[in-house]
Every structure is written in structure tokens, then in C-alpha cells.
Image: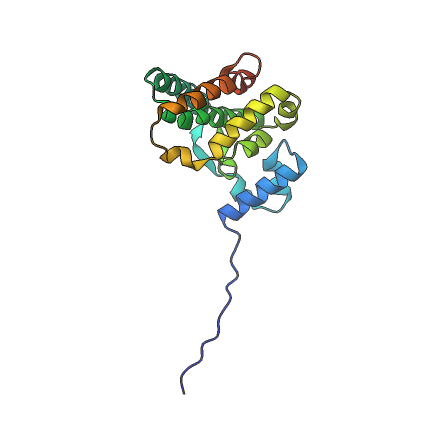
Length: 185
């Protein structure tokens, strides 16, 4: 007669991804301007809130400027596909700068490290302001759609992407409805 082994269920602690999802869900449900405080109130350990990204506030600000220069340089060279892919990161970097600014922190809390532009707008406390500006909100939504579409990473360079690059430039920098104009870059 052989040994019979039963399945053991191990109780796993909530991992970093689970904590980020929980924090994001909480913030989206309640439109919270200070997610760090709310996460703390929801029982996340203090140590989870004291880890920070290696990039500091001024580096996020410079990163947004650098990505704008890269976007412009790619467009000048007719590299439309790459400009579309890279251009959306201008918004991500600027929003991470805004989060540090709102939270009065030099570095972004690691728990808020995400590429989700909607979440970053919430974390920066800008959701209501963005919704009150319909043209900017429309631009943001278009940029967010491109940013979330992973396939841009793998698209082959194509001259037809000039239209996409031109649209992105307007959504980013138009003086009336540009997202980066609204974000102050």
C-alpha cells in the first residue's frame, strides 16, 4: 500500500500585485485624492507604503521633457510608428511628477507605480478636473487608448501611421485641448 498524500493549502499573504490592485480599486471606487492614506486605512502594512521608486520627482519632470524631445525627433525623421508608441509616455511621466507634487514626496511610492493613465490621474487628484474639461478629457481618452494598446510596441513602421502621430501631437499639445498643455508642460 502506497502513501497517500493529501493536498495542502498554503495560506498565501497578499503579494505586491494584489496590494496594488486593492489600492487601485479602492481609489477608483471612492475618487480618492490621497491613496497612500486610504491604503493605510484599509489595513496595508506601513512598510508597504514606505517603499519608493528609484526615480525622483525632478527626474519624472525631466523624463516628460525628454520624451517630448524624442517624440519631436522621431516625427522629424518620419518615424511615425515609434513616435506614437513613445509619445504616450510623456503623459505617464508628467502624471507621476504630479503625484509626487500632490503628495509632497520626492519619490513616487512604489505602491503607485503603474502604467495605467486612468489610475495615475486618480492618484494625482485630477479626476474631477479632467472630467470638467470635455475636450481635454476626449484627448486624454484617445491617448489612454493608444497607451493601453500593447500592439504599438510590435507594429512595423508604416507611413500610414503619420495620421496617428499627427492626432497624438494634437491630443498632447493643442493649446485648447492638449493634455500636456493642461498638465503644464
